[in-house]
Length: 330
Image (cartoon, rainbow, N blue to C red):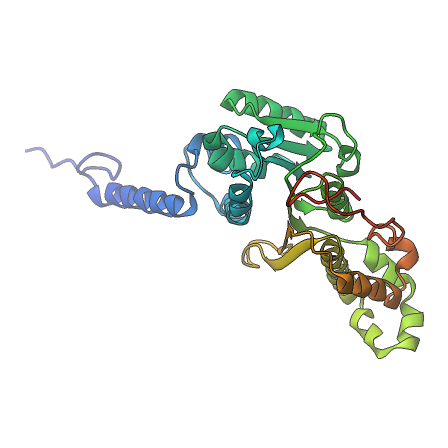
């Protein structure tokens, strides 16, 4: 009499619970993925960007990237919707909104903006600006592969892009996601020069003001007890970052923008989490310009940073060029 053959766990009939668990796990993953995606978002694009694995799975690192970019899209979409309904019938307005993404890297933001908004609209153009040539080449290939023909990628620094012939004279929206150190300031200068209707900025590491605070620390400690706020090196770095972003906001307000500062995502996803959204109103705040000068003077930053924040620049003429809602070039 033959003994009954025991079934191994990997064979049919051996351990049906294992397959049920696997199926349940996959279903849970798919449900979690759908919760992260925007309606109509391309799975194939996310795979090409390596936000999803080849089998469509989402790991913790890619979940963080996707959450940041999709959350940023929620702030940019209303700005694009306003621009999609032109106030005039000029050729530029009919062509649709233009957006320049500075420090584009692998162009996660640009590709997702195109996928979720520009593709369906059938108008408008996205410019990705990046200094690393290999990333620019990779983005060009991917855009061609996907048929995203209203995307251009330029191998330029933010500062170089201001006068680049490949970019239009006016750009509607300027974005800079984690542009390091002074690159965010260059993006603001670009936006002012290009008469941007909106700027969306997520500053990254900022060392310049911290270096200035460090140089004058002994003098400041003798002059005011407030210098205790940046006596320790860690506090110097954080204080420098805080001052830099405050100066940027004041500069934008003095240049005619309404500024909102908020968190991009939860701090568990990114320590560089400050989101600055500036919309052009044309109402230049004199009080913001006065406060800007006062803060620069208080921290001894006039010589090193005054020109960057417009102190040595001539006044901007009114009214703005380009019709209603378009800022004038500085």
